[in-house]
Length: 209
Image (cartoon, rainbow, N blue to C red; front, side, top):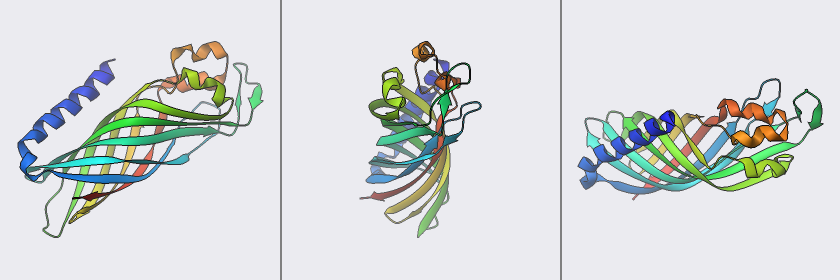
């Protein structure tokens, strides 16, 4: 709960600070590729390439600073080559989960304005709420145990040329994929409760009006 409070507070402060620059605010559309996975002890996992799309609001603050809140439909997931029960016995070789979130990230950017373009780096707290899920193999029966809320932090860099913005970031999800009652299933998927979940890399392109 403390981590959630810190993330929400950071989002609120960033949006509040951005209110000073509303005169130069630009609205845009954004989208791109999201690659994510999760780590489970003694189980091989693979990244899943999915996507994100939504709206972005760029709010310049002066001195190279800008705040950019976004509202995205963000799809993350995980894929396992195999998984087993609590004794290490193999149950299946097919386990794949894709989860769609309504996600609200807020980029806090800094970069020099070089007239024709602006390179920048950013830190980005985010929160999200699960609205869709799709599972294959045993994941299909475990989707009812998925967490509804997600929260985390991203670090990245971008380049802005006139109305076009291209960025890349690495993100960390701090919360678990599944709820605590996943332990009742007796599977090693309980290893997903360690919080090292849905971490990954994303590349985005935005166009501002």
